Image (cartoon, rainbow, N blue to C red; front, side, top):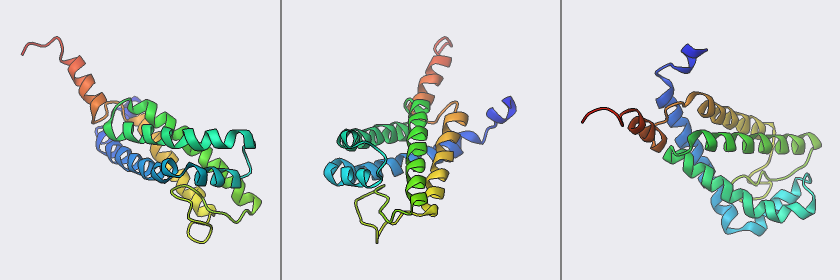
Length: 164
């Protein structure tokens, strides 16, 4: 296992995964931040949360997506951001799987309130979200010295005692 964790190919793969996931989450949050009422309606359509939690979820979740996506792109607090995104992806995947299993004919609401015609949920949506979950977990587990702010901070710490 140690050999797998220390493989030299992880940094570039993890960087690509981080940049891609960060972009996905920044893109996903943009419309939700601008139109929280539309996003609240999308959340309510899933019929999973109690009505009392829908508005707070519609306000908080997009900002969480923005922060986690930005942190991944910057490579700052990378593992915490990857853990947060992994948790969100599990939550999103479960919600979509429940809606698909119920036979709900609805929009995903992942990127914008586009309506069921433009953005219908299906098992393909579940597979897409599972793929993003795997990428987030890859970053969490294998990005030990991330290329970015965290990697720079580790490098400075490792070289703090060496003469110039």
